[in-house]
Image (cartoon, rainbow, N blue to C red; front, side, top):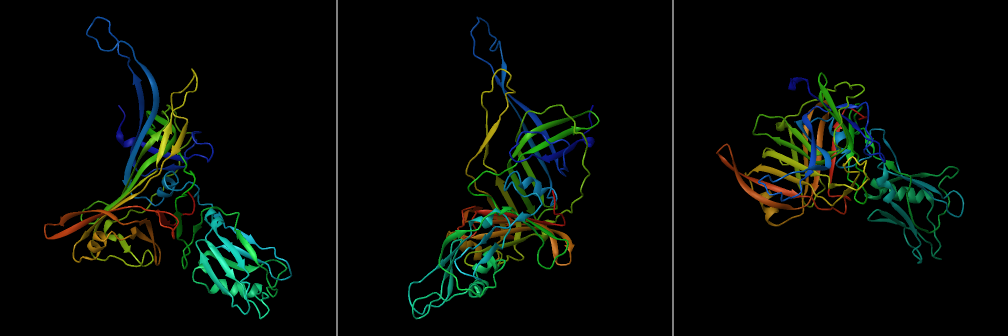
Amino acid sequence: MAELAFEYLLAGLEAAGALGTPIDPPTRYLNMSGTVTPQRGIYRPPESRGALAEYYRSAAVRKWSAFEAEGGLDVYVLPLLLNAIVKGVVDGSGATAATLSTNLTGDNNDIVYTAATGGSVGNAIGVQYIDPGAANQALHVDVDGDVIEVFLATDGDELITSTGDDIKTAIAAHPVASTLVTAADKAANDGSGVVTAMATTYLGGGVGTNITTPAGATLSRLWTFAPTMNADDLRALTLYWGDPNVQAFQSAYNQIDSLTLAADASGQDGVTMAVSGMGQFPAKTAPASVPAMLDAPLMAPGDMQVWIDSSSAIGTTEIQGRVVSAEVTIPSGVVRKWLAAGPASSLGFSRHGRGRRHIEARLTLELSDLTQYDLIMAHTSLKTRIRFNGPLVEAGFYHYAEVDVYGPADAMEWGELEGTNRTIQMTVLSEYDAVAGHDFCVRVQSDRDSL
């Protein structure tokens, strides 16, 4: 008889473009307790044979597996899971920032623009040089969405006078443009030449997502998972589960349906995470080898932080001394597709699709003032940041998992805290924010830069 004490749960991230191809050996222990359960759909046709037996024949017509796991919030495991539910191109290898190298008529006037944020997000940034067509105009910069508009200076004869150096200085001084790009002289250019008008041209070549080192840190790494809004880049997991002394099972093409992060400062449990989803029907296959266990730090609900902003930038207004609990549920929107594959079919799904989805954040606050109540009643669009903190990585930098959610509070419920004060529970359903470019974002800070 197998003993539960000896079960393990292992995972490997399947290659992009090869979902469903098992990864062996797995690369990670999942520091969670969970199961992978084989599932079958059975067809039993109705028949009348002159007897009271209801069924005479049956056949399996569909096969899959269901998985679920839960445990303490783990900043080492979480980036792996987020690849399968939020953004699927974050592997710790860093990213290439998008760039634009101008090629204007004339000498010493070309500039190389580099996206301030690495990865594919920079490919959406454009630069335009605009000839105002009027005399004695001053150089100025505007930002329209992700397009940097440079209105060029002119003299009394309506001739352009702005140089490459002038533009670099103006962009560096602009409060928004300077957060989008950096500008430097192109090779063999010194910035002294007068530029010409240029139609909107977009940066390109940005791939991946940066794993950054926060300013002032040396060991701390910040993983950013901002969901891709117009494509499916989610990855899948190969899971191994079972008792290595009896039998281990392998299941490929596991995609997460739902991930929940939760913390309750009024209780005695730590910050938790739970996942559930589906994969292919498991095979009785043990892994070729077992990866080493990484003991990530545990997190206490009492260290949690929450910010709720309306007009200010997200992360400005911290709610202090009133946060009771927080729970964030993130769905993937993944649906599986069963397609006919001939008489040798495995009866499993072979493809998947993505549906629209939103995340749900539920906050419970002690009602010592009515600030949040008033925001809820006014249906104010909110920018909510929930940070689950762990111990120090180094001085000034903590292990944490952080979720940004945009949108008004959708619902409110009354509650009570220890029978002595009223609480409000507010639920925020994410809505797309045009400035942020997404409806939610998840970040993980730890001391690791690889999965």
